[in-house]
Amino acid sequence: MTNKTILNSAHRELGARMVDFGGWDMPVNYGSQIDEHHYVRQSVGMFDVSHMTVVDINGLEAKAYLQHLLANDVAKLTRQGKALYSCMLNEKAGIIDDLIVYFLDEQNYRLVVNASTRDKDIAWLEQQAEDFDVTINEKPTLAMIAVQGPKARQKVCPLLPERLGLAAAEIKPFSACWHGEWFVGRTGYTGEDGFEIILPEDKAEGFWKQLISVGVHPCGLGARDTLRLEAGMNLYGQDMDESKHPIESGLNWTVAWEPGVRNFVGKQALLSIKEQANSDKFVGLILEDKGVLRGHQTVVLDDGSRGEITSGGYSPTMERSIAFARVPANIGKTCKIDIRGKLKVARVVKPCFVRRGEVQI
Amino acid sequence: MSNTPDDRKYADSHEWALLEADGNIRVGITDYAQELLGDLVFVELPEVGQKLVQADECSVVESVKAASDIYSPVTGEIVAINNDLEDSPEAINDSPYEDGWIFIIKPEDVSELDNLLDAESYQNLTEDE
Image (tube, rainbow over all chains, first blue to last red; front, top):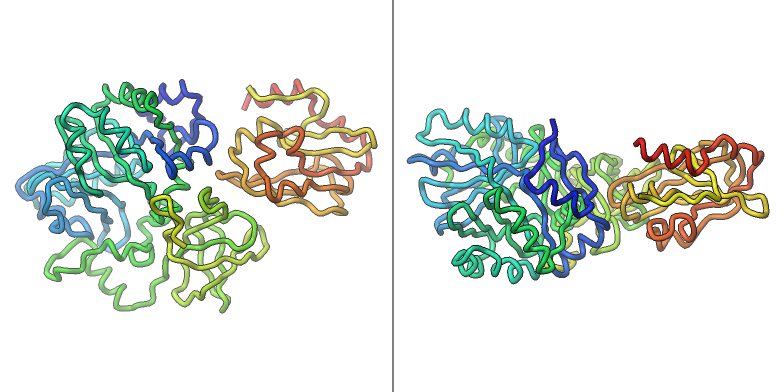
């Protein structure tokens, strides 16, 4: 059974090419994926991300529960509306999912988790909640629209309900504000400024069409993938999964080791992995030769050892191919990639290629 | 609705083959195929002089989404390749039947074209997919 978001018919009206994405019937593009990519980098585009799962954590022990559940520490969240990116680990430090948590107050937090991992996430959240005074409340009747790009905020604020528009204009990056069921986070998955707006399903189509009428271009999951790749943002299921830990996934920065007294699920396993100090490294690659890097291609180091590309593709901003790869830690400044039996040269860089419209390499 | 001119033949793997006045066959991919692939970003061309058997893999087109093999519609020898595609692979999106041609092959036996689909049959095939 294929799931559909509330905007499904709106996408079809626009002539979107639809694909199955983790059991959801979603638009991959509405025409040219490259044009959609450039709209976001240069002006403004929007994505239907209503397939993502919103889960509220409510209760007296909400904070303690999340400090136990997440590898990052929600104690860092002191200002109302502030957001935090974190991995949720199993006991072996394998990544169950990556997510964003918003701080509403000490007893109320909101999580946004991946669509493809929904069932196992909910089961895990419930299982881990047994010893805490909290309730896990999924919000399946909310839609979610990401409006991204340098012009996103100026386009969105006037269209929001009354005072929420004024509040949204003031919030800092990685923060949120809300009014009733409308929730606006200054977050995203593109490396550009913008908002992710959670709103009641029955308001979604009207809001989507208003955004189109003020010049916001609908963009598909295709452009979302090239934008996040350029921005150096991992995709769950491709760049990491339960067989991988944060250190070999470029996500060590999201693990809060301090304060040392805090115990979180997976901490002991992750500590011993860290002590062994032989983890693979997560790097960015830029293809120097012509061709296109793709997930699962083999990376060959100078000493003959091997790694693997986790996500790769064409960067419309840099007009060349880029990738993320998991490789032995002794990798040099260049390596070779096996593309259909031919070894092509790639440069090894930090996995962050483009932010705020600027090439970082 | 994609465009399928009736001056040429089609393979079910989405190549077109156009018999030219000099007896050589010009090859590219169909409008339907380019639309399905999305924006093209790289073409790995065959080499002039390369000898091929009908349905041999001989080229790769890569879009933002995926890589796709191109098969030779007939047996023969490559006599020309479209070098412009190295810098402008998007020509295949913009003009799949004209500027976006990929290679020209000198056929051993031109009657192999009879094994391919005519425009109407190809159109029916794509409508079923």
